[in-house]
Image (cartoon, rainbow, N blue to C red; front, side, top):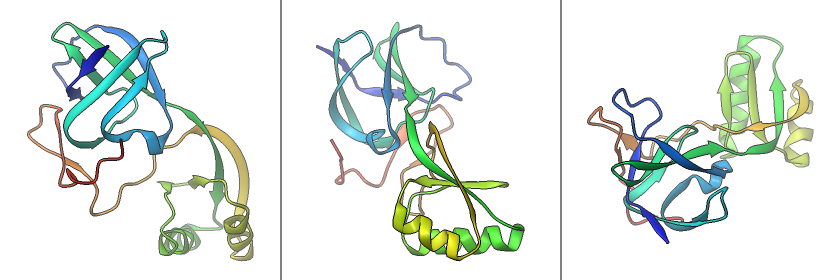
Length: 164
């Protein structure tokens, strides 16, 4: 079984490692430290990172100096939320955050995982809802992993909270 012990971020300027396979994961499975995954080829990949990280769409898991596996965000069932105006948008974001829901916040819409109870609340607050299927990239909270050094390697304060 191949093992990946390093992440190169999608936006790393010096990234030239060729990709030989892909892993497609929903947002909640892209937060990991140590986990066995199955690549599109059907071959197993053991991810064994020094710290817990959140893998983004387009990040690479380095298997060797000359082999990498690309990470792809899976299509997920989401609710697209539209507000009446910017103030309403901010209020909807507050209500969603107050319930500790994961949300992808954009200037003209908010995306959340589908939840009929939350749908009822949002409609009661005057939001317009649409069901969509697309990759989910929620905003990470204040205590989530951060990245530094500018070379694309991930670092985290959540080492002891591995989800894999």
